[in-house]
Image (cartoon, rainbow, N blue to C red; front, side, top):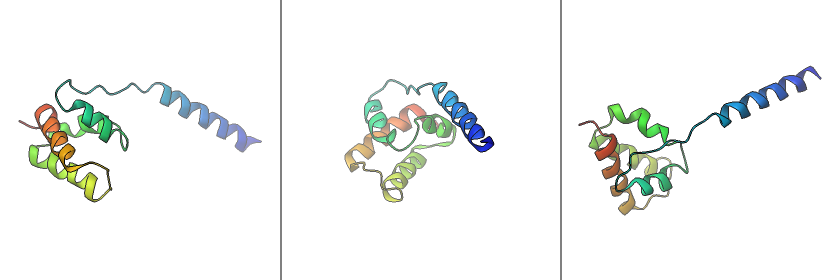
Length: 94
């Protein structure tokens, strides 16, 4: 019974934490819809803002290629270029 009570508390705590999560809004610019559609299926868009201070165009290119090659992200090559261009222009290191 004690284990069931602890499990219930854990579920309630987790659901409360998830309910408090706010959606990530990316900068409005060409390519945003492609990024939102193709990247958010695998991970939070917060990942973009978290890594942005460290990412050059070369780093964003490597990151997108890693998502495709290593993790199997279903991103067509034409969209990969658009994603990199958006990320570099809006979240890249200048």
